[in-house]
Image (tube, rainbow, N blue to C red):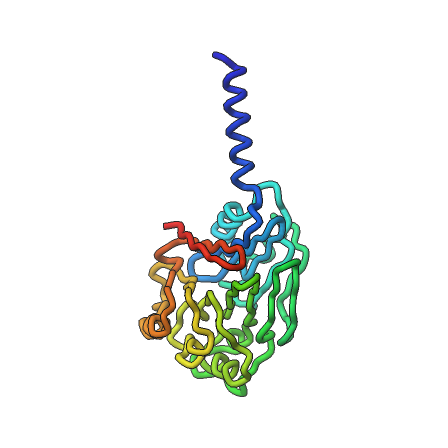
Length: 258
């Protein structure tokens, strides 16, 4: 056996593998397939942010291992929309695997978090903006943080599990503007994604983080019709697996696992 030759081949393969994982200078926004839950990884260079954790440790860590270079064991900031298990259930176990620089879980409306050219605008903090929670809803869902990610001309809106009354309150407060990508609220529940809300933000792409054959009937056919009515392209993690967006702040490319 020619050990020298095999050594060269292994070295070349190693270099290629590392090169593939090396940051490309573009913004990567990954919506992880974590089943019935939410988790999104945001990567720009050596900076990483996580929006929610989902409830499955194995699914989250699998997504993180694909999105973050193997040598980088730090997540600079973790945003939590609210405390429900399907959004924050893996936080404690995540701390055992990664060094977390900052956890943002109860921000105030109009707070702004900046990391270089990335900006995270808190359009709604953890406080309630409605006097009464709608029937079938919960204070936990309505306390979800609504956050807009901005990078150059690109924007993505994260909505947690807010329902109809909170969406309409945000429309009434004139806090919403057009966005490129919408992380659809409450996994596509029929109690969210109102016509008025969608017409205000007019998303080009709508991401549904939802479990296969879940027990809640998510996403609702009514929600899907309302998204279609405003011209949004719909992608679902139960059908497409993990969904990855790559942008230089101008052009947007979309990749799916399936």
